[in-house]
Length: 268
Image (cartoon, rainbow, N blue to C red; front, side, top):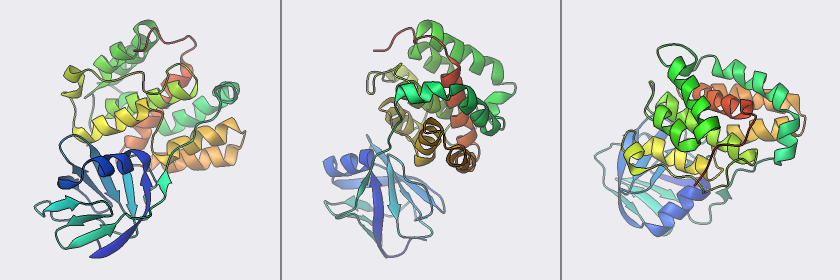
């Protein structure tokens, strides 16, 4: 259970913006020992324990556990989140924004980064049937017909709280942005696709389409781009430990993004 009074240590830029524009009543979407997802009906943020890596929708608290009673009333004000008897002080909290390497630097290490990501991606549900053929078709479609065609095949595909295909799509998008193939913010899910998955996945995909992902993803790309193999591999190892298989699924999509040799067919 989260401490009754706790400060936030860092807040993702998307979470900060969402909380600033939507004070008042929020509700608990899902709660786990180290992550509690919250929504106002439009935006989604996640309270995380202190040891969880930063992310664009994360509010990293000073608590070891952040599970709450999902029935508790939740109110957001300008400087705090109140969930039942628990208060998280978000005033004067530093914001986190992930950095990406230069596309030219990433291109020079593509041949070595791909295998490093593949070692993580091997445990993804998308690496084996019954999902592998559809996943391959999705990434092939991205090269020929653009992100919409890929998303049509990936969103909602596979197991997981955030489906494996959704996580892979996020990984693909962040690498495509880092390599200069997609302009941040230029791609959005169509409403029909958005309805095929849940609010948590939609939030992470939206962030990825803006060039933002969990910190481990940025550390993998930055470490690789500067030729720091130890940093790259440490970040890959950390990514592998995210969620049940979410880290592996993200790595699967990142590797697929690296493997495409031509410009994406179109973005919008």
